[in-house]
Amino acid sequence: MQTSNFRKKLIEVRQAKGLTQDDVAEQCNISSRTIQRIESGEVQPRSSTIKIISEALGFDFFETSNTGSDVENLNQSSKMKGHTPLWYIKDLFNLKTNTMRKISILTTLGITIGIALFLFRLDTNAQINSKQENVSLAENESFITSVEKKGKIQVVFSNELTFDDLISIKRRMDSKGITINFKKVEFDEFNHLSAIEYEVDCNDGYAGSYSVSNLDSSNENKKIGFYRDYSENASSPFGLGPLKRIIVIDAGHGGVDPGNSNGAINEKEIVLNMANKIKELFKRPDIEIILTRDSDKFMALNDRVNFINNLNPEYVISLHVNLGKNESNKGFDVLFSDKNKFNEKSKRLAAEITKSLQKVNASNGMNNAGLFILKNVNSPAVLIELGYLSNPEDKAMLTSAEGQNQIAKRIVEVLK
Image (tube, rainbow, N blue to C red; front, side, top):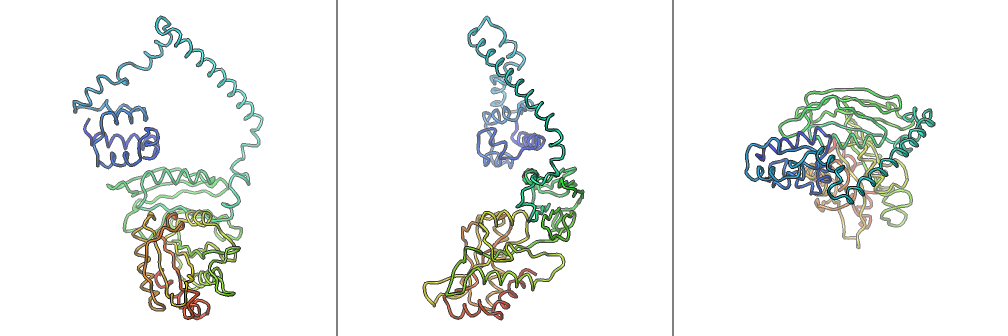
């Protein structure tokens, strides 16, 4: 089999079965990287690897082989080509050979089928008895967790998405009680999404459909998708089609976690004031600023990441304040993570913020940091250490209304 033919056929079969590259790798007991390299044409798979993938996917890739002596020889001796499944079934009931082994197999098979039928009957009766309870499951208050019902979920379909990304989105929304049906999808020559028609059902009365045929660079500033806002005071609980772009401002620490302190001054209060100031100053009808916290409450890192990823934001900016060993430490730091999925965009955002904040304070540069929130959010992200509470000049700027305004304006200048 020619490698290019196998690669194309593998992609077709995998997508037809609704499998991701990770799913195929798990079924074949080989690495995801191997599947990726095969599909991209980086490596030429061995005949033994093709056989493993054939057996795992239930599709004989050798059927389409016209070239390659190695493949032809393998086809001659392969167990897949030796006997049909019907031959094995007939041989199982031929007790003239391997009698005791076949009796053991048939006995075990009979017991297994008997138990399965018994359990099936019990399950059927249970379903009949509980039919009235299950019929309205989608409307049950416990179907979607209280955390999800208080927050906002937003999904964006962009040209950066692949087939595997769409499968992942569908599964993630299923787990949240939201059903997505892709009526039509098209991909460009780089296997990136170029057109989509989709239906969304939140299973609580909110549903709709939308389609777009030009998801390319000309629409990179236009967000297409849907959102469901479970907040009690939500002015618009559901929407789909063109969406507002979202920027998340994460005020670090909060509640029982004060962060760095200098006397009665706490980091958690400074960054919350700064986050609220940024939201107040930012005015664009097509972009919405959302805060991870708008009051003095504790929020664990995992909860912050889940909250942010549910929103699918354009950018994430996490605000913090430093504390040095002595008063000489001064200035701001901008951090990013090279483990972030959008590493290059994160670097560009960090560079722009650094350039803007230099107008009001000294810069300590931009640096790579393996911080949890920077690594795990699915959006371009930076963390800003706004200054040092241990430095008198920085402290005065961070705690005064005028200083906070200057810093907030410089950040808003970049976001606009």
